[in-house]
Length: 322
Image (cartoon, rainbow, N blue to C red; front, side, top):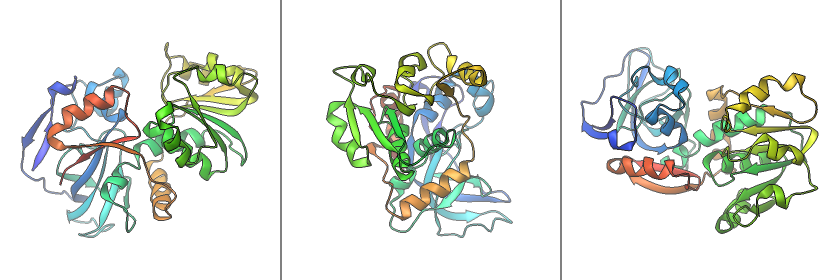
């Protein structure tokens, strides 16, 4: 089988594609033929080993897995002793933000991990693109008390996290104002956003003077609590997908009980199985279709990583392995 191969942290140039034997599943493991996966921001962290603390989760001083890849959609083609949760032939999807090594044609994965059946009629590419962004978006939303009708601002609504946040917020009954570039306003509106703002002409905070929101979700980490605080209710909260320019967001979140007025929330992503349960249900009901920007074959994974790292992707970048 073909697999991504790397033995150290670094830029996409360190990646090679190698032929290796198909692995044998151990007790409690599934052997999955991977049909589609994604290259995402989490994968970039696992490739570069950044921020540095991430290396203590994915391998220190070297990567624990030779292949990158945090998600997969594929078919069960074998299983080890005692693995009974899935059967050969089942179409499955899975995600782990601490790296699965799924940028490979075959993958052995413990069936106790966050894995779900792909709903009937959902393509492998759609299933693969539905998990990473939705996981972080769900953790954002679960970190606050969201009520139907709450006004919520999403900055970076065209990324994997931001686009999933728009869908999940609308599912919860929020009224969503989404920030994106002019060419993508129709796409974001189709996700369910009640209003879109073009940030390329005027910063979104300048366009919203006098308005306030229950929550601001900064899905790209390109704003700050200081800039967004005037946009928040006194009981509101700012949430960001990044640490902040001076790593201040976790600190502000820790100090939240001592602060008056709007707070910072910085949830630690967790409960992977809960995300997959939600995503698979919404996919089955036709209420969630993740954005897919580009598709790359495995042999062009260096280009895929370079594009994702540029910060210009719209939704998700899919890696096809058929």
